[in-house]
Image (cartoon, rainbow, N blue to C red; front, side, top):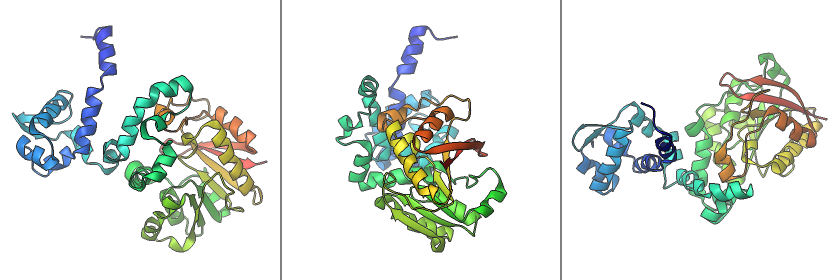
Length: 330
């Protein structure tokens, strides 16, 4: 039977279930159950939680289809609950870490909508990027979230034709985090050299990843802001998971730096975009509350690129669905 409009609204506005999911993720309930602590007394002790309160939370989640209760006071995993053992999922849900930043940031949605500007600082005391800089442990979790743990192994195929790689000698990954994408590219194309551009705290974490990939001898780290002049003369400049994090003015500034750096070598600039030609962009409200960023249509991006001195020369799709927009300076 269909819900009444009033019940639909209550279901849509329910905050109880999401917070319960965050709590059991933070307490690593699924991990403890998988280790055999199914009975509520042992489970609460392992989690460091109040037995009655944890049992009530779990019974609510059982009603919602997360966990099962095969006998009173004994809880078990189902397929959905097993997802709470995934490292990337836990990074995004753990209220004691980076997940807490993302969860509590939603309390600033109202002032963000009223002003059109992020109000993250009202909750955490600093704007988002400054907050990460001030809290190294949270920053490290963010870097993990943006790397293998949160996004899996990146697809290195960022050029539409495989034979085009023969024309490339140097790749610059602009805002490339700990270098997950760049490492995959260098592994797949042994003739290439790479330059990773990101803040000092982030590129410092890349050495272990590059060593494990066996590419340390072909990669250089440029510890800097991408708002400063970029390494010049490369054949390919990549922007993955960067531009959605910034408002239009900052996006134009980043693209302008790419255009300046690529101009001397007639290098390409390839941008990862969610929406393809003619497609609508996602509302992407998380970026609104965190940093004031947004996803953009190809048309919106083309206008910003032109303002920055770049012209769009083509679009293509990766196998995973990401749209790639290729630009050149001029």
